[in-house]
Image (cartoon, rainbow, N blue to C red):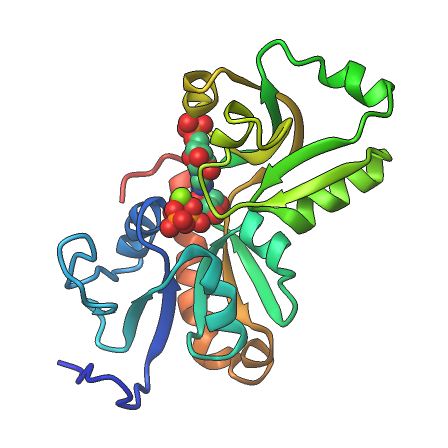
Length: 230
Ligand code: PRT
Ligand code: MG
């Protein structure tokens, strides 16, 4: 088996993934390509995971760190939410495949009963808590709404409940988290899914090395969308 001691040169392809929903939804796509991790990141503390293909390994990083690993060439490929790519900028990254996984929407949400439209009509200055400061700033600037952005790193839903903010900008999938916290979505900002990302320079210079794996993953996405069994 490939030696995975840190700093050991690895000649194969390195794919950066975050634990949790992206890992969970990417694994079945990779399995269609004959690639399965040999270690479960939920039970192991290992961050470099060998796979059933000796020439492919996975590295486990924070979701928001995937673009950095791929941009700087520490990983050849990565899987990142469009939210992360838009917020991060995505410069230097080629995005060949929409994996159509980890779908959700980036939304503006406010406490139930808060008159969002009225506040905007009155030209009120809104305090908006979010992890997505760049996306939120661009959204409200395009609407001509004045906002004080409050940068948070998680649990945005708590901000309006404690008086920290009037509104939040966050991802919504089932809507259960908003409901449980007496919040309501009032405005969509973007439809989100996860994308395969490739280092832009590597995509030009090492296309022959990377393209077969990208193609096989893309094929898996197409088959999955047709509901074909893996
Ligand atoms: O959690 P951690 O701080 O480690 O990092 P992360 O939140 O960036 O990672 P992770 O694994 O939670 O999310 C990775 C990616 O999954 C995101 O970048 C999105 O592209 C995608 N995704 C899809 C989501 C959701 N759906 C989602 N529902 N990411 C987060 N959520 C959160 C949301 O922020 C809110 O707190 O789930 C809650 C709402 O869910 P519902 O189902 O109650 O509406
Ligand atoms: Mg999370």
